[in-house]
Amino acid sequence: MKIRVDLLLLAASAACFGSCRQEPTDETAVARIEDRTLTMQEIRTQFDTTRPPTEAQIQQYLRRWIADELLYREAVRRGLDQTPSVQRRLEDLRRQTVIQGLLESEIYDAPAIAPGEDDIRRYYEQNKESFLLAEPVVLVSFAVFEERPKATEFRNAVLRGTSWHQALRLPDHVGAVRGRADSLYFTEARLLPRELWRVATTIATGSPSFPVSTEDGFFVVNVWNVQRPGSSADLAYVRNEITNRLTVERRQRAYRSLVENLRSRYAVDIYLSPSFGDTTAISPIP
Image 1 (cartoon, rainbow, N blue to C red):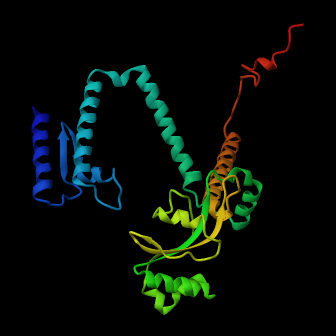
Image 2 (image 1 turned 90 degrees about the horizontal axis):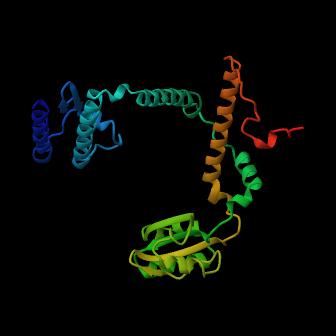
Image 3 (image 1 turned 90 degrees about the vertical axis):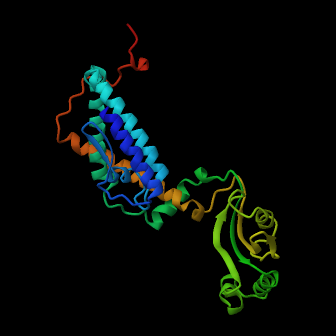
């Protein structure tokens, strides 16, 4: 009966969230089962800290918390928490959690040194074959205008010899530009609106396109480079991927170094032969 009363109180508090729109404090008791109380602070820690959880998210978490707490209490009542298999899993979980804490302290949370430009370029040159493109990629700039005449004026300025970036800064164009992209890489799926891909893959490199009419306005497109499938991606296109790879390699080296240093601190005896289980290492019977 006690649990049922608390659930009724929970329903009442949920109704208050929906009707009163009162923001509960962090210490507000949202639900209680026997001696266990759930507060709003505990709920908020389960979500993105940059924005508060929605009412629907709170309700969903409450239902899951109640179900888990009831199931846990029943399992304990039956003594299932003391079975050897559960105890082994708990010990394994405890060990992995402690190990993860050490790795976070020594490797993942340690001050990171970003890979230098020389390191990135060297890795790129040594691993170009791993950056072969599976689809076309274009390096594009575009400017969006609300009116076709303004888009045409901008295009003509570029054709007369004004650089793309200088043309964007001309007083006649600054107020007319609704949006822009400067030297960004696109695949067909990412270049929107769809009309732009056909233009980007047919115009001459380095020449501004005629104004392209779309629902979002009139686009003038300039293609700086087109990379074909099977070619190596530009360094700039895969720079972030290389940075991630180098970061992973650095962490792997740090992990191996940590383990090797610990081997000298603790007594390690290995009784298993390196050839154990390897049938190819078994000597033939004389």
